[in-house]
Image (cartoon, rainbow, N blue to C red):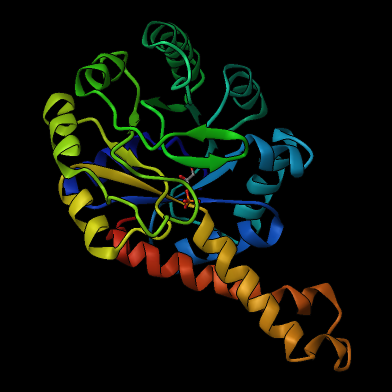
Length: 287
Ligand code: 13P
């Protein structure tokens, strides 16, 4: 069931658990994540970066595929189709294409420009029934060319952006997209706590969810994180399972080269990884 992310995140914040955002790249990814969410009776958010949107030939293609698949698989749990790290133009395109949620990443603008653009997009999103995520302070690492320095957000700026009426807020707390370096300092819980104190009931979003130790994830959820984004870990398990299949020579046995067989172990691995994350975030049974 395709819905905005508003209600699922309000419930998560009140219930002290988090909803996973799992990024999608193609049909197999989408099917695996929808299947996992349904089996775990959990809400879930399908994240689409602008790069992944382009790869799948555009946001309209993505909406058509997700809507049809949601129906064909008989998905009854709440699913949001969400733009990840959207530009101003990308946000407008996703509203037009029928997404149910958007993220405007204005973290590279000055706080005043971030505020002005976020304000405008909040109105556009809400007028069209979508939820909207905003971001304060950049997040470390690189994703689709968006580079951040791993900075931490300023709690007062977080309050300023939260007060614009966004439905969820991403704030840097030392988190990084992609694989964490060996010398990573860890999540800055004092910063998270200060942001939580200022923003109250606002669901907070933890980006760069892959590779963060489980205890840190749990503590972040205790301190007010209601949405955790995961991308890299699903890519890694997909690649490992596909490698294992080919290295075992299975593509050369019978019709093992058939893409429906060749991609099956990777898709299964994404499904299992998604289920494990849903369990860790505590959203199982919360649909
Ligand atoms: P990872 O790829 O590090 O899991 O980050 C995902 C993310 O934050 C998407 O916005």
